[in-house]
Amino acid sequence: MSWQAYVDDHLMCVEDGNHLTSAAILGHDGSLWAASELFPQYKPEEIAAIMEDFNEPGKLAPTGLFLGGNKFMVIQGEPGVVIRGKKGAGGVCVKKTNMALIIGIYDEPMTPGQCNVVVERLGDYLNDQGY
Image (tube, rainbow, N blue to C red; front, side, top):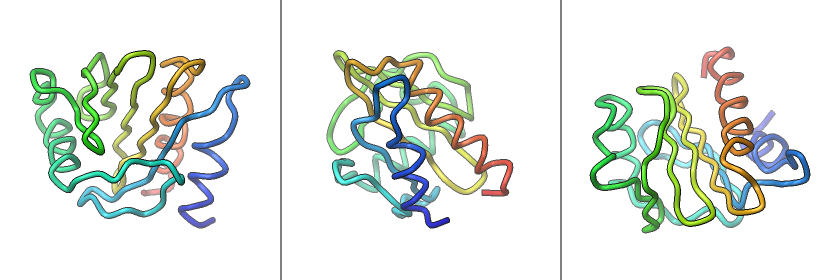
């Protein structure tokens, strides 16, 4: 399966009638493996800051998580594994795997929990596959 198929068939799928606004799979170095059409144009330093927070959990809490210039307030996650952010009625979930970052961005009517399930389920699967 291509990386784009993981984005299209798993991340952008409909979950309980709702779906992510955009999603992507990136390498730890910030290289784009695959993305949905509306995924924001991110900056290398934004991905570097996310990776730094995975290595030093809590680092993004004071400044927020930036993605494509959009600022998300960092909320609960799993240190070193998942970062979750909120912005208005939407938010972001970033799951770190052995080799990749799985990123899902959502807005209402999708709930944070639905986004987390979609992103983290694929992340767990890719981890099990060695990615």
